[in-house]
Image (cartoon, rainbow, N blue to C red; front, side, top):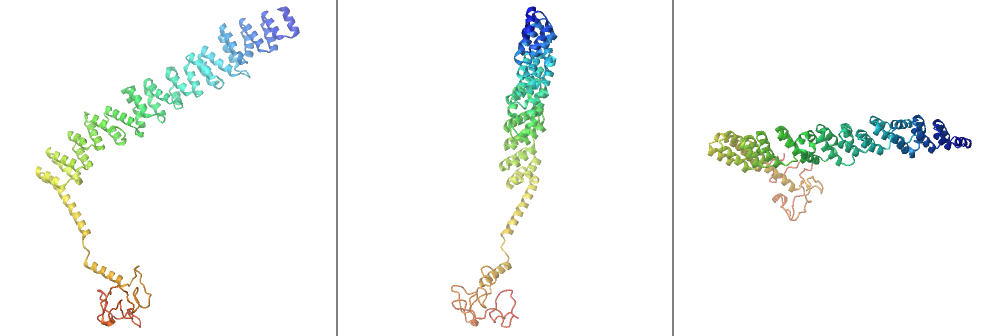
Length: 508
């Protein structure tokens, strides 16, 4: 090798010269020769030789030149690993981060080495150099090393939200509530949300309401309620804040679940408010369930539900059983059914409830027939209790008859006479058919023919008189019927030929 070294020096073959230095264990000279040769094969041989000789500093110098080439990174890692020099390998790649032409393979391989040998550095490395990592490789390395928190971070940063949620649900150490809430609303597969609902119910029930606040706008509430029911009765209690939050949508499944909770909690005020505000539920089912409840207020709610759904007889029967007379009277009045009201009044008479009988007459006044009230009062001796009803009924009947008589009364005689006079003036023709005074056609009155001209078929408005020679085939009036004197003013009518109109003053 010494002779060969002299020959290679003379012919300036640095690659072969470096190999001679390696065999002569002249590692510094080998590195110098490799630097002059400057090819990856020489660098690699010198690096591995220095590594075998435990010349770690010289090996690192050569290794930095080798890892610049992505195709040779795996070979360097394998050689270092086979010799067990993991610390020096990590140090080599950490130095490689500062290279000007550092490529993605260096950052990725260093992350993988951290997952194997220095777990505490994995998260920081992923956060600092995320944009320069091959995420899929590093994530797989993290999962193999059971480092689930860095894996979740990488999934979220790479927008693989479904995978991040899956890891957090399957691996308890990886679960972070805030990260979970941020990722759950961005998943592509909605089925993941329903899996998250089950996960929170079983693993983190105290945080369930917060989860539902986040996903309420994108999940099917009916499906969530069914899922909660399958989990167990306790789960409904856990989900109660969420159910109240979404009840405004008036969904049947949500309303029924909340109503069940209110019954279980014996909160009759909340139950009644829910029934009044939200009508999408099975009324017959809840009314039947509450009809036998041990608490009076819930039986009243049962009667109220029947009443809202026009089951008048069932509602009144429940109220009578509990002696809730006011409820029964109000239900009967709302039904507007005369038969139901009469039956209730007869029941009050049989039960000797005089005051309730009077209250029923007062409340249901518009729907009670007077003969029924009079009969019941006479048979049962409730004369004093029916008297207000009868007085009011007589008063109303009197007012109605009085109003009817006023409308059908004949008009007064004076008014009839005035109407006749007006009609006569219209026939005379003082006004045309349009009601406008007409003064044309010479000196005649408006609408009247000229002297000597008659209107065939037109009856004469005045009887024939000798003064004007009688009536011809027409109206045969004298030429001067204008009613005005030649010198102006109103002409006096001839004697015996006045206008004959009541109320007219004679000519002066």
